[in-house]
Structure formats: structure tokens, C-alpha cells
Length: 264
Image 1: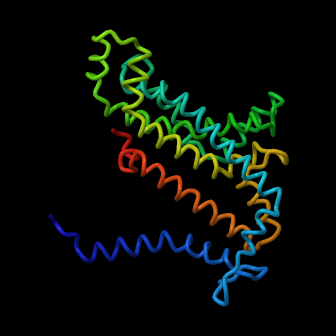
Image 2 (image 1 turned 180 degrees about the horizontal axis):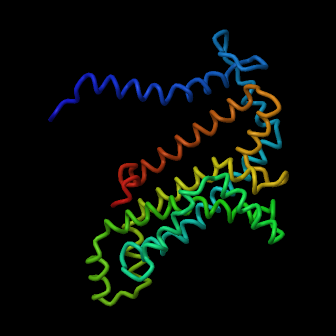
Image 3 (image 1 turned 120 degrees about the vertical axis):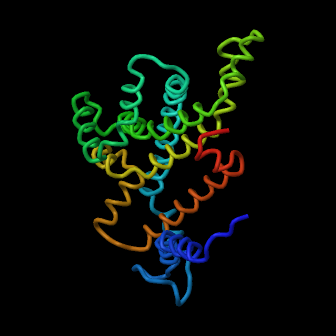
């Protein structure tokens, strides 16, 4: 087995430390007992974590982001699975154009997308509504699910499906019992990445959301525009921990290497 060069190992550790340092600093600041941002070297406190539960606006924004992220990720998955399977397994006129159209939100700046959607929803009379925000987030996260579904479907051995069809299985049975289970890692990974991106989306949500439909990132942005206190550090730490838990659960059931590769 070829050993990694010590210089490369040092570089990898330094790069990892550089990437993780801001997260560690945020977590440390969140345990301060002071009313301003400071390192808790003179004693840790749960003050700002308890303060989260007393802030009803932040709690409501958290649940709103949670429901919005889950709904947008689910809708995007329902659209991406059939689209990804068709694109990966079939050759038809306009295939590349359709794929480019579905992936286009990745290439459009979120500011431009937010302004365009604001104008669109205003004309429909749906500006600032929850369903409009859900539709906007679904469009935004659809490419993430689609890319993983296409990758998983491309690595799928079609002879397995053909064998099931030759034994008399219907198209629905083949999809439900053969095709879908074999691309589940890609679908699950796409759903999770879509959920995280929807939950974390700020730029576009500022334009589309209203005072009554503020998501957690928008609420945090508005809060930090007026005051800076360790409350945001404690909220950020909670979000970091929740993200790590989701990644661990996904790794436990499907394996991150398979999910990120989009293959079984």
C-alpha cells in the first residue's frame, strides 16, 4: 500500500484546520456568559442557548424553515426522480436542452433569481405567501436532486430491469421493486442536500419572503443588522450540530461515499 507523503499529510491537516476553525470559534463564542461576543475563557454558560427558547420569533422561523426545507426537498425529489431516470436512460429530441433548463438555477445568481421571482409572484398576487416561497425554493434546489439522481441512474444496470420485465413484472412493479431501491442512495443524498440548501437559503428568500413568512436565515440576517450578540452564535451552533447529525444518519443507513457518488 502506497503511503501518503508527509508534506501532503501536513497540508491536508492544515487545510482541514483552516476550514473548521470558523465553526469551532462560533461554537466557543456561543458558550459565553457575557452580553457581547467574547471567548468563554473565564467560564462557560448555557445562557444564550436558553435565550433561544425565549425568542418566539426565532423558534417560529426555525419551524418555518424546517417545514419549508422538507417540503421543497420532497417536491424537488418527486420532480427529479422521473426526470433524471428519463434523461439517464433514454435518448430523445431536446434531451440536452431539457437537462440544461432544469439545471439552470445553478448558473443564475440568487439575487437575479430573487428579483425575477419577486416580480413574477407580484403579478400573480402571491408575493410573500408561503406557497410562493415553497415554489421558489423547489426551483432552487431541484438541480441538486437531479444531478445525483442522474448520476445514480447512469450507473444502474438496466439488464436487471429487463430481466424483471421478461418475468412478467409491470412497469410500475419494476420501478417500485427494482429501479427505485437501487438508486435510493442518490435519491436520499439529493433530498438531504436539497433540504440543507433550502434551509440555509438567504439571498433569494430576502426578496420572496414577507414579514410573516421569514425563514430562519432571513430572521438572523435582520437581527444581525440591528444588533450583534452571542444569540446568533448559539443558533448557528445548533444548526451545525443538526447538520452533522443528518450527515451521520445518512452515512449510517446509506454511506456517504455511495450517496455522493450517486451510485449503488
